[in-house]
Length: 248
Image (cartoon, rainbow, N blue to C red; front, side, top):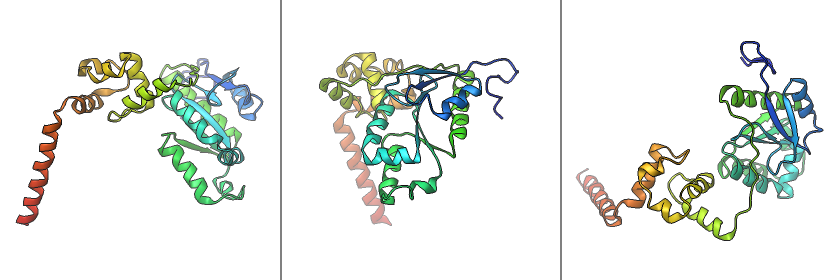
């Protein structure tokens, strides 16, 4: 069970800090957070409505705002920037799910497509809340978990537009196994050039935060296995399969 906002598990005062975008500050969510003794700091955020740690930022949308952003095409650019800027972005949808299909004259499949794209294409989890009070409670709990439990503090990460060359390099490195745009930029920041990324040893790749042993092994094998051997292995596998079918 979560402790009361403003106090840790031992009853000591815990300062939970939430950065809130200046456009979101007048909302009832921000006021509820302040009443719950969170330290709400108004800022002009380039990305998201709430930032609660160095890796988590939250975009809050009411049902009506969500539908409007689908219609005017704001939604997908917002999700892209959110996903590019933070390791673990979250979209909070506030209101009844039933209203999502009744609020505007919009085809249900268009709404389903938008929700699917957010979850699959951008990798952003969607959390439903019933009202502003529940949204505030959810934001506070995630912030408490990050700051009191994980010892992480809010950090603003501006979404910088990449130059054409930078985008091409990021796209090139993001073609490696299980490397998304954030890891691609992290690899390029560490090694400076794609050439250095592709020629790095397993030990050097392991120095990059977030890769992990299994991902490093797959990257290294992809970059260093002889293509002719891979082709031969595939042919051998097909031959074995044909022989097995023939014997069956």
